[in-house]
Image (tube, rainbow, N blue to C red):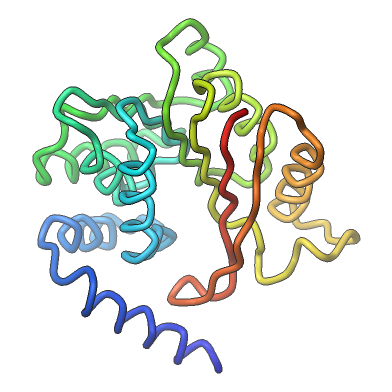
Length: 219
């Protein structure tokens, strides 16, 4: 099995279970047009987020790392009529692209885009209604701090998903000086034995190559 086969399987899954989605396709096309980095979740991963958020009965979702809003669209679609996504993005241009994509998808009224350093935004959110579901896909150096904030801002039983936690096996290299790998290893170290949260991680292959996601529930 190799990377072309991984991608072909993802395409098969998409054809059989996802089908064509004009709003999502348009969002990816606009992201490319605006020269955003092509690091969105895959369509199959987006549908997974949608289903996990629905299974969690989420009404209040936090996303850390908006980029062009592709994953935000999936999450906003999972909400009931009175639900809301708060999504944090450090780059104003990325936030502007996301806002356009959300407007085109008819979801702008469900999403609150907050621009700035996520650490500052999270610190300012203390006292807001607790979140039911948190998706983290931002700078990997901040993963441990972001999950710690999600624990403080989430309700008991809330779901937390963190993307890109395998790094093509890089997490096994304790000598790596890649800050993304160092940040991801720090996340695993933080969660090991933490009584506030019950977590696992799953390796994945596909159009996003070899990586994985962390899935956790607040105790």
